[in-house]
Image (cartoon, rainbow, N blue to C red; front, side, top):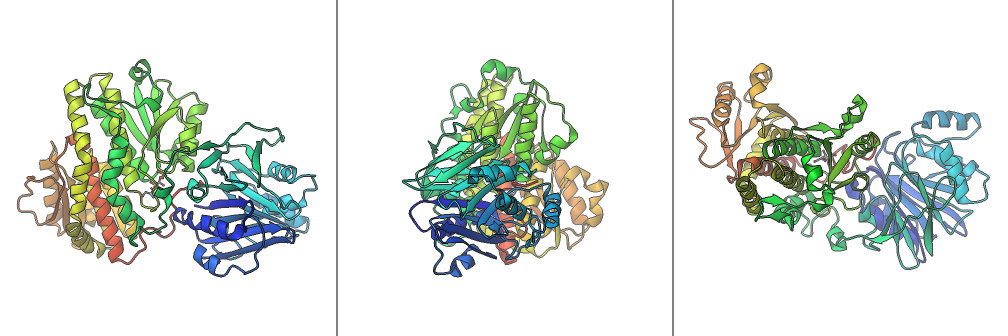
Length: 610
Ligand code: AGP
């Protein structure tokens, strides 16, 4: 969703801001803009459309070594030049960029209009620019604080003012902001990706915190203007990993590059965490000792979208291996049902970005009520990672494509490691533990093998792409796989794809089966294979085309079906191997249909507003 960058230093700000915005493109946006201040005043350049268009039209003389930039994902008002950020006040001397939502914007707009202020955009952000512009306090910091006192909602925001041309003032409440420390220059951004080319020395602001950036340093403070002790630290990331833009080196879409990275990402999430001797996993970052681990009576997993579906796969793993009741719930619903928080429940928040607002707010709700939350998070130092009591990083590397692939695979492996650790302090035998450890070691090569079957998968996908509507079906362990398969398919192909339990088909959806509605069925070799195959016959009898994702040797009898075999694994690990071909199917279907797989319509990579 929306992205923020800011620069103060000795170089012209605009080119650096535009470069930073380019690195935030993957978050999803519909318009962009920059503003810079200098002795001669404030300049703003913004428009609907791509960052590259903005760069192409930047006026030659766009002076200023202090500036802010923004990519906007529309919430209040459509994508248009006038609604793009930065927004300015009536005098044209204040500019603001803002992520989040100002809840009382309508009331503030009315109040400003009654005072004779001419509001030019539909946005909530513009009111903030006017509020800062109308303040008569001595310093920019005090003016921003005064404006914030009138505002309710969430924000990560940055303000420049022509009367204070040496600084940027930023504030955070619910939307991430990071300050990057350079050599006699300072940066601010909503995402590490925008900073890493310049610095890996970074300070994460906390909610309720503000900061002033000048060329020589930064100071942090609270709204009573008292200083806080937030410091910058080196982040342990490889800047080269962020060097790719939206396309891979050879122009391949990022989603494709990231799918192919899955074997390596799986090796990374396993590295140093498996213990062959005792058939267990070591996850020191959970901050749970053996006694606390044994005291866990229930596991509740929270995530959104695909992270939620992988959470369902994770819940099955935990129940099967650790024999602890476990379930997953959409984080976006959790806090609205006034959940009972139990002291002996282990809450697990799962997120690639570590920024998803619903997951973050669920974590905060649990912690407020005294629960313990651990995170399975990819982005190091992200808001969710920092809000949890402990957790494990997924080491998937930067994931840029909106459709998540490698991060989900590492989430699944993370759950397998967690299940092993929980299981081995309970009743999971050492033999079973070792069996799983060996199975996990095999995964990277097995994923590689599936990806090598791309040509066959592409051919099957071309057939599926012709259908307006399709089903993904599975049972028990296979059902969350079906949900993820349908999600990936609709996300990038824009086809209607519905996931259903195979066992439930007869209770309604069978009525929709026809030669025009294909079904992708998950039929692993397990105790339900025969029943699954029987259900496929019912679909075939009604003319429904079938694609069956299964194991070598599974007998489909005389069914007419396109068959996709995945390698046999330990059966608890089947779900992740069944998921990989569904990613490839979705990717190729979207390509056949001519869609931009990396930037699906209406979607953002990180959903940072409710
Ligand atoms: C996955 O393909 C989707 N883009 C989406 O459902 C995503 O998984 C969800 O928004 C959660 O994101 P997170 O993992 O960054 O929290």
